Length: 318
Ligand SMILES: [Zn+2]
Image (cartoon, rainbow, N blue to C red):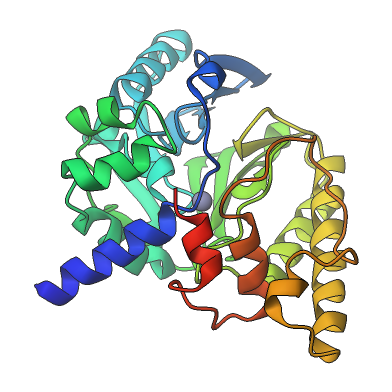
């Protein structure tokens, strides 16, 4: 039990680095964006975006954000609009900002990658006492409100690799790539060319790649494979919807980062200097304050064994 609590605390600490601090001024209402005739994305500053895909035989929702009431409102609005019930909730990965509001979908099948099960189990084990909630409140100002109604639970359908939902031509494909976390997955709706990416695409912000199971090679591979699929629109984990040109910006940045860090490592540059070296690639995202966790992400790429108790992690702690 003590071990379980310690593990949960560790995961809380790791995931607490997952999103940059945002101020109250940045909090804005959720916006429902029509992506295509059958897809609506709730662009959400309170945790992850939520997406609804209207299949002929029911609605598929992807990710929940943090606040149960917001997720429930979105579900209800989509059920009215498309005149059919929710059938599945798909979770792209186990980070809390994507799953915390899942109680709004407690009566439907909840789908996630089998390889993500350990992260889900750790997240569910977190006790949301005042101390833990305070950590998240510094990242998401609405978190204290979210805790009051949050009842996260384990997914009910674990998928190995790939599974198709729907019938006839009305299909949504769930598949796992890894990259951002071990079991990071996406949803592809081929009939309208819409891809729901989870955090493998994070728009107009510093991308978070500080999970211990992060794998930039797999991440790049996923982005390139999506380019080949010619999506018309991509619903990201955070930020506004984009087209496929955004994928290239991302993978070119990651490739340049890996190459630069490789050279620095070959020259045995100390990690403290490597994370700020001028040879690192320039940002593809708009100018903004650097998140506390940013240097930790780079340090983790430079040395996967970098300790959470290192100076990088301490500087990253919200
Ligand atoms: Zn994430």
